[in-house]
Length: 189
Image 1 (cartoon, rainbow, N blue to C red):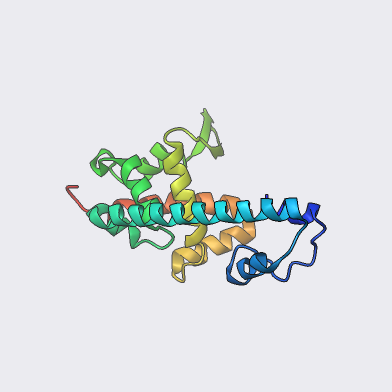
Image 2 (cartoon, rainbow, N blue to C red):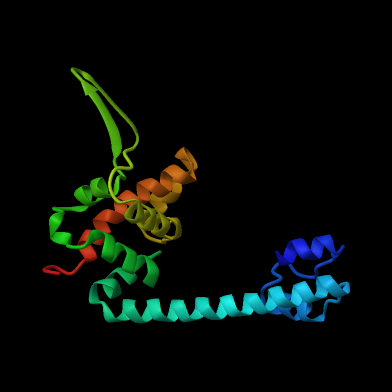
């Protein structure tokens, strides 16, 4: 809304790309607009400050809950997983002993390919998307950041992204991360 207000007021020479960062906020405090537009801009900036404060408080609360949960702490050690994803994985998986391994967890998350098999014909298709959509989202989100891993798994994912495309590589890496989640999850928890 702030950007739209600036455009409607004829302000096109914004000195920075990130108007909500440090320099951009300083510029927003200095910019002058016509009277009604300036009042709207000041209200929107105050609203932005309130929302930003609420986001910081929510992030602190999530970090506190994640630090208090030993399973979330272990999951947080994975590349691409932070407190939010660790708590999401923790709550969506529940009891890890339900799954014998990463393949079963991937199937529960809907990250395995559809299979059409009859006699001697065997064809795989897109992922099933059966199961928990939040778990699938968390694993794919973690895979998005895990693509930068320096280890063999990260190199494999980057090579796959070149051959098959980024989206397919992220889903394939999310499937592989299921193995890592099962291995990291504390036994008996």
